[in-house]
Image 1 (cartoon, one colour):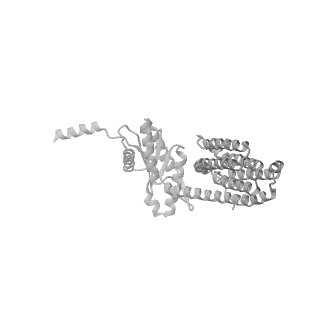
Image 2 (cartoon, helix red, strand yellow):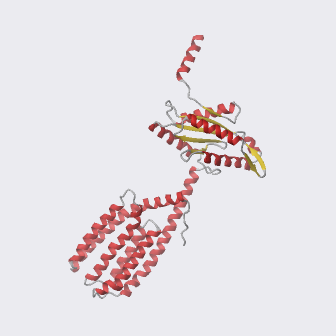
Image 3 (tube, helix red, strand yellow):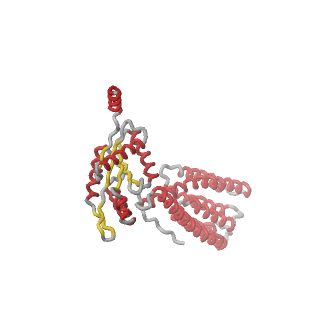
Amino acid sequence: MSVAPITDPARSAAYRLRLTNAAKIRQRWLLLSAGLVYMLVCLWLALRVGAPPIFSVTALQLGGVTFILFGFTFARTPGPLIEINPSLMVLAVGAHALLGAAVIPDGNAVRAAFIFDVLMLLSVIAAPTLRASLAALALCAALGAGGALFYVPAKGVSLAPLDMLGAMVPMLVVASLAALCLENERRASFELKMELERRATSDELTGVSNRAHISLLAQNEFARARRYKEPFSCLMIEIDDFDGLTKRGAHVANVVVQVFSGYCVVVMRHCDSFGRLAPARFLGLLPETQGAGAQTLADRMCRDLASLEVMVEGEPVKFGVSIGTTALEVTDRWASDMLRRAEQGLEDAIERGRGIAVLALPHAPFADTEANSLQSGAA
């Protein structure tokens, strides 16, 4: 029943964020409902059995503590608070339960043990991580054992310590096993969700974004660049003579695609995006980049890849790429306008002999109108 660690920093951060968000909602209503119910039950019990005023006063104070812990779940960065909330809940309720066992005349071991058993289950449910669960359970066990052995007997109450401990130990074991099982289920669910997201957004062969994901990123980057009036460029890239590579063997074409994708991921910046549109066609998104900068990068890529030699099963394989580049223009209304222009630049590069990069410029509407008028006059 071991819990496997998540070693990847990005996946570990995503896992912690997911647990925090889930536990925040869980704790919010669990603390409010359980705390208020416990306070009302204690006030009713105090009126029924005639408990000393200190028991009722501390019950009302416990209600105030409940609202404070409830407020912690609304913090802007609730991560650490969410983890310590279960332990604070155990400390407050456990101390009040021991106080009630010491001052209420008919206090007994079964009632005190029942309260601590419920506390253990609530702490496992409310805790976001295994560490938080075990910390709350350890505090609950220490508080219950210390109260049963030292605090309550010192008040002169005939509470059987062994009866209380005997009723708490099985629940402590069950709660610890439940915490381990719950953590395993959380990790398995997270791993499954991450794998489904990876398959839905990534190309199986290269690991870069697939067509649907890179198209969505293009729309988002285009909208952001237009809104904030920032430069934005894109590259439409195609591997030259891909059919010839495929005829040499599917494994040859796959190795070339993987090497090319790895090169693009390395040469592009962290803020750039790169994805596969078709077996031999790729799209690169370059936010905050002018057209001249995109053209410089594309020229460098053409030179580097033309001089690159890939060894496939001991045989050298050379390949090149053709690239169409373009930049965001004020006349662009949709991301598809840029992509069509980049595709036109790619077609121009292919027509000029491949292995080069062509910067595609937008059509000049006034020039087109003038040409049409001249043709009409000639007619």
